Length: 178
Image 1 (cartoon, one colour):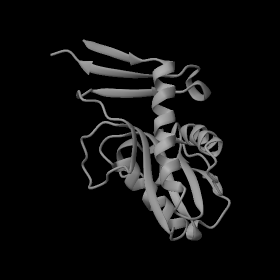
Image 2 (cartoon, rainbow, N blue to C red):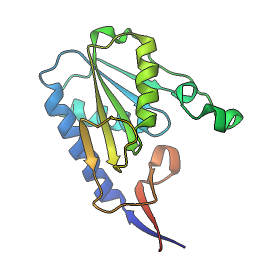
Image 3 (cartoon, rainbow, N blue to C red):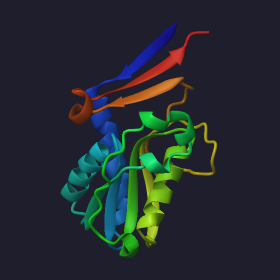
């Protein structure tokens, strides 16, 4: 049996605002900025963050969407189940500080795949990682620079739901009943 907790739309908006404030504070002094979201919810989150950051008076020079499907380290296991989508980055990343945005970090493997994909596009000035939820549980030595929420409990699954992709804004925290 699974027990679920849910963070609603208002609290989620506060968490996103807080994450945007962290990024905006950093970006005020670090040179040309590009915000790149990892498909499929990191890109939506990135767009929301860009809008908030711009409203804070911080310039975002470029933005993009990164598809990491072909960089996953579990391709042999999932094979034909992978849905490859386009990466949409129309600039040379070499001159930019990249803020890489994803919804949830857990093992670090998605971030590793994203770093590999970005490296194939050039050598960024720097790459900083922003995540909405940090679950802990790393299998790789990767840590986010900006975190919206770090739950104190361990959950079996955390699902971020955004209006643009899921029809509603919330986060569902699921734990297995012992």
